[in-house]
Image (cartoon, rainbow, N blue to C red; front, side, top):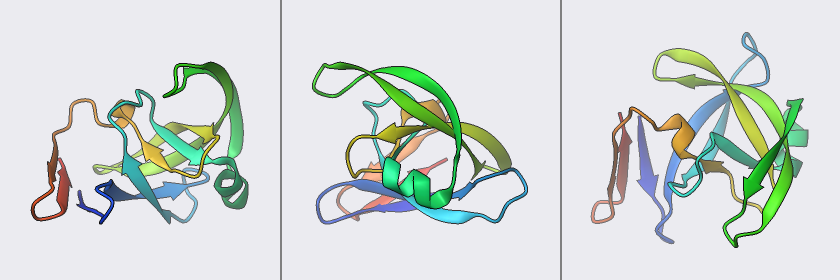
Length: 120
């Protein structure tokens, strides 16, 4: 899976996301966040537009150290030849993040010289 590094230095990847296992995929551009241990964070407004089904409340420690309870939602992504059910946490900000939960067992290479990203 290939992505790129933008001019602000963000490592970006496009992930095909679905609202249900057999639904049509939509591209979701995500920012790789190795400090986030979950799967996906998506702004609530984007979750509402996609029509994702509600999941459970999840506990989170935010980047500023605050403890929080956040709403989660359910989505499916096409991920290395499989359709996976993933937990989507409703983000408080505007960033769409892909966390370590989806990268475990994978190799992430970010080349800031060529502005290329590879996840295999």
